[in-house]
Amino acid sequence: MKNPVALIFAALLMTSCVKQNTLEEPFDRWNGYGRYLKMGEQTHILWAGKHINAGTATYGIDNNANFYVTYDCSSTDWSIKETHLFAGDKKYLPKNRCAQPRVNRFPYSAVHQPRVKTYTYRIPLVSLPPAEEPGFAVAAQCVVYRSTKCDGHEKVAWAEGDFKFSDKGLGWYDVFYYNQIANQFTILYGLSYANDSLRLYHLDVTNGTVDLTFTEYVGNSAGAYDGAAYDIESGILFFVKVNTHELWLNDLDDEDSSFMAGSLSGDVFSAAYQDGLLYYVDADMNTIHGITFNNDWSMNSDILLDTIPNSINVNDIAMAPDGEHLFILGDVNSGGTELISWDLATETFCSMSVEINNGAQIAFGNDGVLYAIVPGENDGEYSFAYSIDTDSGVLLPIEDSVIMIEDPFSDLSGGPAQ
Image 1: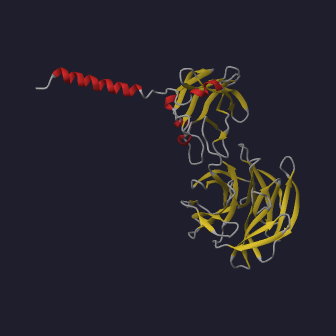
Image 2: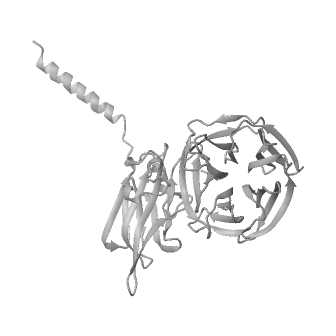
Image 3: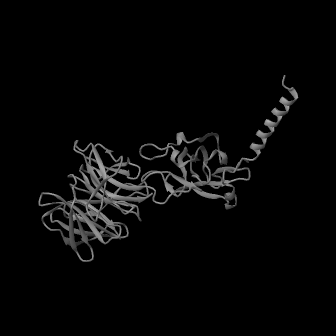
């Protein structure tokens, strides 16, 4: 028979060992954020609508290892009716297909009856992603209310941040202690044919996603839109209403509608923007032009820059990031397709053969690569993305790059760095 005293001693010894192992792995309730405690608070304006300062949202870390967000309207005549907060891994931030935030799915929400002037959320740091990998994103939204003589006035307010949710629309978020990789995504913009509306698509070439950014009725008559170009510094998107020859602009950094900058003399189906000049090709005369602008973005002058050899029928153009070469994709003598580079300094043309389908559109990404979006053969219901080697003209298919849209892109342009 085994000695019961020995068995009890062995069991106690095992229990002791387990407790000792637990003590050797201390629990970090700060989750790596302890060093940020001394950085203090970050205060952001709560913008109600577009331009109304309704109060502030303050982000910080307290001494009890919590991340906190305080909504504060005490310095204004607004009060808080609802609050919605996201704090977590950026990839899980709830958005719809148009990249607009879905605040009803934010993990922290409250309805305040009666209304309040201040409200604070406290989130344990251990419930957030670790500080090193990857940190977390924050988005703070609320519904604010102000009494008037006749009735009350209610608005949605967002805490201003470093990043907008989409190219058009309200809402910001911040990457709070977030190790974000610079230029992680290569973005292009694509216009599609439309009988009565401009449709702008946001293409993430890196991850193979396509989202409809916005749809907008432009002008007093139906028509197709072409000649897309984008200025990364100002956030202005340029496009042409083909049937009226009107040049339109849209500031993608705000929520305002497009506005007309002026009228062009010829048919314009391709454009590019670089260093204050909008380049376009007049399809009637086969000439390269440059448009300058006034401070209010109205057209100032239309400069004839060069004439393309008559044997070339231009499909699209793209300006190289160095601003020294304009690349032209066109059909030669109604035969094969060629990629032609025009040297801005010497005004000379060089060309190389490219094996590419009709209807292809080209644009340089923020990574310096020339991309082509090529429609398939099924009535344009799908397209494929390629990169083009500008030294050899060789096309390289981009993996998992099938683009499904109702109509093929009428034009393509580069996009912002993201």
